[in-house]
Image 1: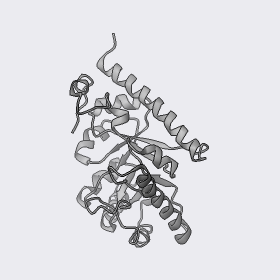
Image 2: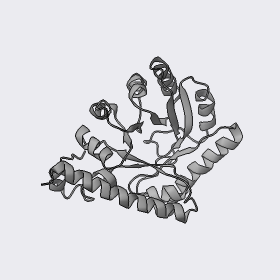
Image 3: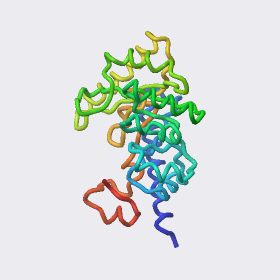
Image 4: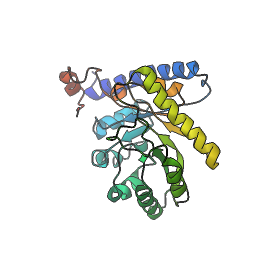
Length: 251
């Protein structure tokens, strides 16, 4: 007889297969079929045991946006590469530098300096992406396109950090063409920084459950997938019983 854990793992494996099919189609549409896209499962909705089941289903990259929520999971010795994808305060940089391999949300030199100091202490090299505010919304984190060259200049020489790309979040509720334009602007910005500053910035972290296909068509190399991949039912608000059945919470 299958347990709830067995059912949840089967669910994630099936969703992952569907996700990979949709990613492959998006790559083909954009003539990028030869390139890979890294799927980061956003595990803020689940506990450590369900995060382990997500790994068992075939996911190797996990993402969290709050260190307090991440703590029991990153300390559970899961077979995963951890990505920090949320706003980061300097006083939490030490914990993130110790437990995460990637930080997608660096938008201030003070945060980068704190991460650099902590990574040196732990004798690690931390891969960072600079978050750019591509939507122009004042409530969203991220450096402006105008300020980005200066931030890159200040961060690129910091020890124990490797700047590998840019991250952006599209405006919620925007039309498809508008979302596509914001993702395209981030790719062009990345391309411009590579050419002007002589840098290699291979990673573009953009796209979530509701817009990852558009992001891939516009050049994403990392997509951050939460609800679609880890929630047992698409309609998470209207079907709380389904969430409870699989031991998954929703905030």
